[in-house]
Length: 244
Image 1 (cartoon, one colour):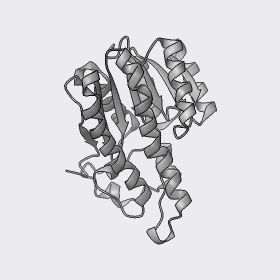
Image 2 (cartoon, helix red, strand yellow; image 1 turned 60 degrees about the vertical axis):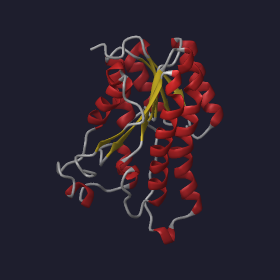
Image 3 (cartoon, one colour; image 1 turned 30 degrees about the vertical axis):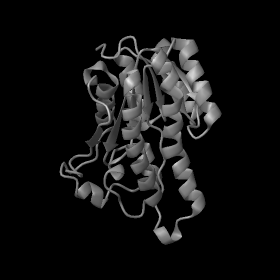
């Protein structure tokens, strides 16, 4: 307990799935957390359950103005920002020949532009705080692509690249930037666009199962904490061995 004592974190996509697991774990470990999500009802319920250490802000990560509100809430409510987990994401599956521009741009807006806006938004507050940790949730698809998911792969490879570029640029301010690359994770988002129950991805995962949201959250906790103080620019697969 107490691995994040004194730290203020923003977790995007925090109302359910991996983001919810991260928010819960971070609060248990001493952080105060701003939970951002477009899902208002579960987000507010989670913040109420977590008590004074958490606050919910309705947040579309693709909206530049919305980021200003999230950052302002973190600074006004809790006094600063030390950790950002860029967790919000969406998926889309389609054969390339049938993939629409609208669906492609929707995925890029959330998964790629949202991460860019988040990273940019916290540079000032983290510099003021003497440093910080940005944890970008990429994907195993950001290290090795999967067919029928061209927009998703494009967005997650972009997150991998932005993580590396951000790490090099922001190191002088004491800001670390790392990415996590989950494999198949048992979360509601997965069911929104992908049937994993009989998936070849699960069958070909060396550990022969999906990850739980908590298994990803504990890696995010390590990267958010001072335990990983000499790690930046790292791309950490948490995929049951798929990319081994």
